[in-house]
Image (cartoon, rainbow, N blue to C red; front, side, top):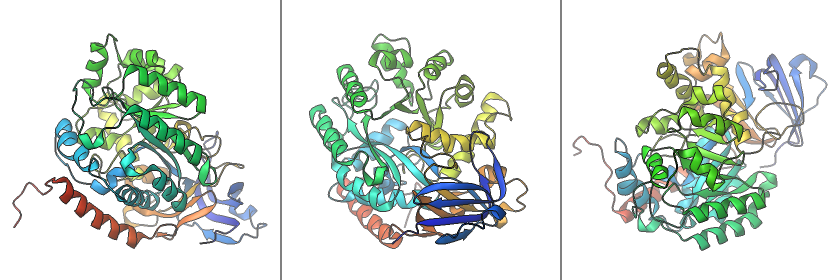
Length: 465
């Protein structure tokens, strides 16, 4: 579809997340050629003759949500391994299914994931590990078509271990370092800065045990030479701590520092098992942590020290993770869980208030992806990545405090409109860049064939007849 050159959003409750953290009631935003031209009161915006006028009455207008830890490939295997211990979860289900992807499975899964993300208000995301068999080139094309903003990370590995468990990797998931680096370089040259500047190509390092020390250092060198980002799972499991200690390091950050992994161009997913004394170094180096509360609680991985991290100045954003470990890609639900679970952990109801959690899901996410000068807040000159959330619902009534309602009562399914780069991706809950019916149909078809091909048995624990 042809997007309007100019859009006026009026009568909204605007969460700017600007440096003053201003909220504008009865507010308006004027967008032209993909950028925010003006933000203010509706009555001052009558001078604009926009191609499209959106009435956001009874709605929150805010920056698009940014998910900093996504597995696009895992949307297709949603619900494949619930209520299972972590190692069995990987060995018996997740790796087996992903290791049997073929053909267009990867693209079908990516489009299913992106359709859900757009529907629930996510405009930018960081995918952590794309295997060769998923088809990075085709996925990049799908991101361009869908209209989202993304960093896609190619898996890099040279070993078959996972933390302290040697040779545990499913054969279909194994790649060699030379091929990984070659493909990353090829995709970087073809796609980095592509899709009108919305697409980045990053390095997605396998977890500890899957990457040799020499390869860690080589990837750091290459990433910084290219001025692109890196991401990996770190501190998700206690075994990560045991791994670094077995390799002569006292803790995770000492290992990461020696490998050159600390810095603003790194996003560590989970970060559960950092010690308090490590947080200062993470803050000093501006190393990003992607907090994944649903995944961490479902797999009983533990509780990340998020209040302590935030107090220390560590940049923390939020990630939904994947279909088997979270089961949704709904960042609004993830905000709610983030706000709730840490209060009893530190016995303080004041930690992580709704406003701070919104920052984590918007501006902090932009920082993690290195795009904070472009998106993450609603300011003049920034790109128009904006969502409108309808608040006129029985579950959100009375709406005396929209910020509180959004975080503590909200759901991504209240999202009405999604705009990226001034382009409408969803309007009045209708996807415009992806064919939702086709996406759902293909996902069901490919999922059924994948499960059969992999020989994985997925069924309820109650008897089925």
